[in-house]
Length: 167
Length: 300
Image (cartoon, rainbow over all chains, first blue to last red; front, side, top):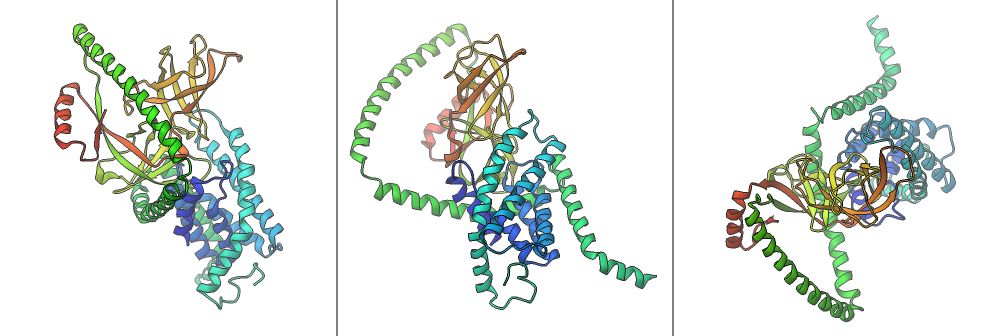
């Protein structure tokens, strides 16, 4: 599933962006992992997802290796405290978390001086909002899709595995 | 005491795991900041594992696109054919004129005893994937270290400069595009010979940095590589100036550039493998005539 999404993200979705903005499928996957997996296995998977994104991107430092486990643990923290079922809540949380990840990466970029030729923070913030919006919009349908795949794969999930998703 | 420690560990094991995982991620960032020391092996391993899937997906997408282009979008074929024939005639005429200029140039060079310009060998590669993140600009190609690709090598297309090799694995490589914020190439404006550094500005745009205010640069001016950076031979087209602004203060003026290559629609690229000294060019050209362009190596 991870490799399939990575392939989709780096081929089809990159070739046909919506107004130069692409929903981040791997971010949605990481977010979903928070509801599906237990902390240790999910944390390692989120770490690997981040590592893969860094590997195939022009990012020379590897910021996603740090940000994706953080997103996962934040999702784990919130899943029992908030109602996360239904389109509006899933959209809102994904949108907010995507924005937060963007801001975190910007901070990391500034900390590690990843802009060797001047500060482009403002320009990146401008692209961040529509990017997060599209990621948020794509989240509810993808959550349904992931859930269907998981149900086919394992029709009787362990108690507690799907907690937070209302299953 | 030992039992108490065990219970404390069980109580806080998750917290310890989270701290360790994040610490490991920070160590990786630190290692990458030191030119990828220690992580190159894992990078290459994962690149080798995942790239075949990208290659397969790109092949499927291309095949579907070709089917659409060949069988469905044939409506304007006749008109396009007529237009292309007209264009061919124009280009033949232009080619004839350019040949005349080339011969004249050769004669003058001999007269002036100029050194012949360096040429270079190139290898073709197929684009199999684009950057999965929206903030960075890179592509993955299907040629790696086993094909002689090394970090820093220049990547071009017939339309102009694309970028340079950022990461390599035995069979695949990642190319940092000229529009990425981390990219910088030494360049000159073809018409006025004004020097500038081309820096990436994200979506299909670059900026000409350190362009002196006293230099006369206009919209539409072609910008080429200066040859000073080492990886990029001199005279490769980078793009055209799209915006000039002298209203600000300071020593430098502001200018933007649009790359001559559409970096969102890349399918094939060429990697510049080596620059040949003038004496070898003739030998290589003879070899080329024998091979009749059968191999993947091309010459300028």
